[in-house]
Image 1 (cartoon, rainbow, N blue to C red):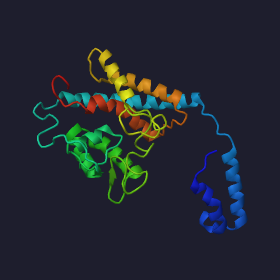
Image 2: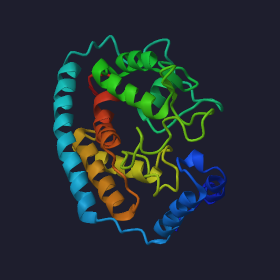
Image 3: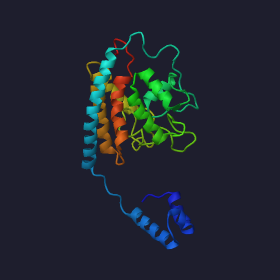
Image 4: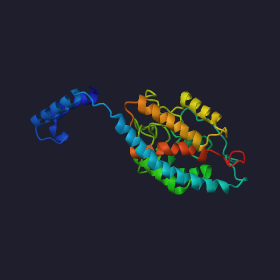
Length: 275
């Protein structure tokens, strides 16, 4: 049975002011909360692992075809990279985030902020993200638009078209650090919200060590698509086995799968040895 102080306070509040709950009298309020208590007391149904596996497999198959198309497109772009236009460029030097700077679960946006392509305080807007991802990562405006719009709708401020890379200092639970909106479980190198005891934004040394081992075992010794595919397989299997609260909502799950492809395709800088 799971309750909170807010839930416990609702019966008295609704009984005194039933209208704020959309109810017409005290008896209706008492009946509603009696049913709520009965539902809370009932044992929670166990998750169906076969259903979860089916959902994950379906999403994986669907998004894998999209990732393959994107990978082909990125390959043609990489072949046309100007060797005199490498990243990082002069004027965009690395600076570690300061005490008041916001950083969160997206390593790409964190990287752009650390190098000054995005505001270093971590408060970014739609236009800044489109420009920074294009200049820093050669990301297409169509993909950047989809990701930015969803971040604004779920984690940001619609009026200013902005959001924080980590937690929003003005809103409890706001910003990209908010779980299962843009950020979600089965990340390349972050623990699930449940498995990390609420820490869904710091780098997991366990997962990164695993990722490095896959790269070391690969003939290229690089973080290739095959290496990141092995990382996804290991992470998703662990989440399905150990995380009883694994929630793979459609859009965040696409971001999760895409993140594994982002590492080899967006984090290389165009040098001949690391195209």
